Length: 156
Ligand SMILES: Cc1cc2nc3c(=O)[nH]c(=O)nc-3n(C[C@H](O)[C@H](O)[C@H](O)COP(=O)(O)O)c2cc1C
Image (cartoon, rainbow, N blue to C red):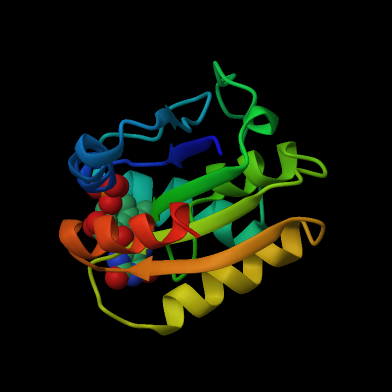
């Protein structure tokens, strides 16, 4: 079975989480990036750019990925919560997958530990691409808990 990690990260919390987890697994990793990068200024990124995209459901262009996700049986998808759900570059990535036949396991992190965020994100992902099988992974958990969870996933 081939597994790929796909992640989005703006202030690098998710990047660091993925790197710490992947020391254990050494899966292929790809970062989703907006073609026009978000501002480095938090207020501009959060209250102008990201807010408008989420509210208006804008799917921003993303940089071309150097892998074909369809070569993998499983995708471990990591992102921070933005405005109560996933950042919209994740929406662009998911819609680009077409009828991906594998399974996508969803992992999120955020500043506030509100379990509703994960419910929102999973609901919104399914709405973008109902043909894809999504599985709820972990929300705001430690590196060790991620490693244990992913071991359970790949040994099943
Ligand atoms: C645009 C934006 C929107 C955010 N919205 C939320 C939110 O709705 N709820 C929350 O708890 N944290 C929110 N956060 C905080 C991030 O989810 C949190 O800091 C996360 O760990 C950042 O991950 P990153 O460093 O990989 O980008 C937001 C951050 C940004 C930049």
